Length: 260
Image (cartoon, rainbow, N blue to C red; front, side):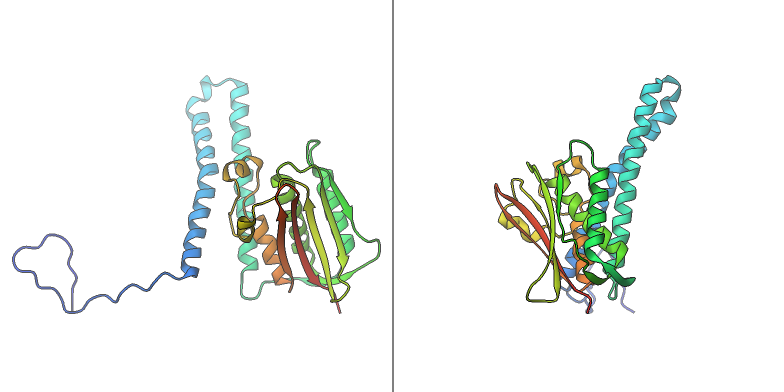
């Protein structure tokens, strides 16, 4: 049996004739997986560090802290715990969607009605300073086969993305229509913000990709919303895309097959 020994040797060196096989070149899938793990670790580190720091301070300095300080510490712990919860939920959603055969609970649903109610719920939950959202949705029914919860997630993620990250936007419009020459329904979430550089568009659906990392984290979000949107659309046999003109705004569009 050949044994590999490491460290300082004495006397004559006798190198074994058997050598390890050359390392295989790192393929794109391996690199993507390592980048994903690194990004997850990075995203987890900040809220965990904040929670640990403020909880340690509460335990060690509790008798000396004023009630206002204690409340402030607890609010920071709660806010970062919520951030962790959102990140874990998004990671679980991605893991479910990235299986070879995603588990979809398909049923017939009225896409226009679902889109309207989901966006209206988002409008109600907005704060007063949020960018106004308008709807352009036909009144008639349009039936598709889809997973209701995943459709809601898709719509919420696209609307939230525009609300949080459309720099300089004064309005967001959600519009939908039936394609005239194909059995598809088309939906878009559009803003009139400053737009996105063309070279960045192809990366927007990457997990954890952010145009402006610092400002994105300040505004909230996990960096996974557009990745989840893409996985939901593709799991339903559809397509998703982004287009933008600098100074004019950005549009995220997806198309889904109608129910036969």
